[in-house]
Length: 408
Image (cartoon, rainbow, N blue to C red; front, side, top):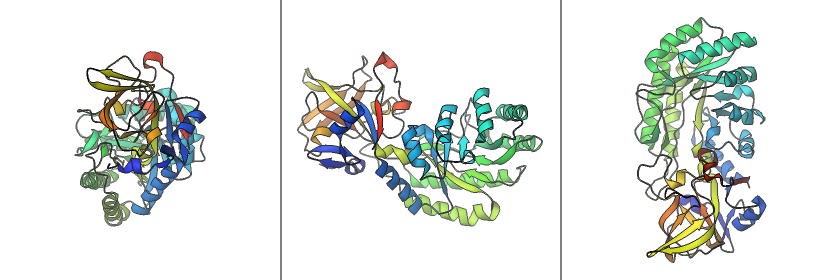
């Protein structure tokens, strides 16, 4: 049986999946119930070590907290990454509770409320402004509070990136200021009491094609160098975005990270450093850091036959793990890697469909998958569950209990 590479990263003891060296059934007792998410701190550390070894030394790592805002995960990463990017005041407070300096926290996202902006200005985090109106509001709040806000401009570039699972640039977007409008905004900022730091460009997410990411980085650097000529102050911050993908499906090939690292090294030495010598250059990653480090474990509560098809009904579902159900961006639903945690590593003996506990046919976690026999009480594990799991799912749907989260 060919194992998904991420599945192979987790251990096995006496036929049971282990996370951080602890068997899945014991973790269920520790969590107090199923379903639960478990994140392996050693795998998190290894992922940062891989990035440090492969990307240029001058590239700093920013963790996108939205991928997994569990406080214990953010605390662990605070000692490993250089900065955090947040997308709400609640995420900002989680980041501020770590040893990370407020000056190493950036706040992006459309639709920031005045209350959120006031908190961000008071905290001293960098506000990545998404519109001209937001810039005016930030300036007014800074004047009211008597604090000079730290700001960067998020740019909606005039190009799109091929191969991204979710495009966030090119054409009309709610994200960022259109590139052609940025020069006028920069002129406006020069007449405003704001501390301008630089630019943020995020072109797309979940990209497994190194050549597409490299092209996006080259185009981003070209764009920023043009805009830097219009900036009211030297550029001290440049967020190149991220978009590094992880393989969810059998057909997916892992990202060629060395190719991305080589491209960044060339860009830094030949284009960025000669023109922007003061800039702190950041790659912002979320899914790529945490996605493969987590699992979702749920218990079989019923096994049933229906017209020749075997169903395993579990106590979890899309209300905790929307992405695995295919309802978080998949056009054609395909299975995430999954296994029987209590018979881990055994050869498959049957074809079953794993469904959740919700009253909707959308609650599908594994369609016609080959697994060892699982009975009521056995544990099913879904991999690639470290990012966009619990907080990206409709946890209040049908009022089932929330899943526990543990860092092991």
